[in-house]
Length: 137
Figure (cartoon, helix red, strand yellow):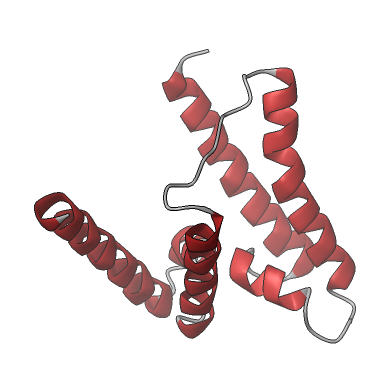
């Protein structure tokens, strides 16, 4: 299967999962909010949050187990730098009241002005990062 068809299929599955999560749970499928919910006082959303995160972990594992070669992943700079980067991304997601999945996929689909501003900010920062990294580093 071509990479274009796989990308199309992946995008369709993401859209379907976000729509089903909203339909079945009445909530936006934002990863940072769902993961943060795992660390709060347990409530009626805990099982849905656990299943969602389990699916996020199981999906790539099953894909690579059945259809592809397992990627060799070695973060540049070591695991400590990788962990610090992950914590900063998590902090930024909470500070921005959501992540790219919540704002970019679910928020834009609902025409949320807050999500439109967040996605514009994400893209501007990504463009600036690529420019700085490419020019100066």
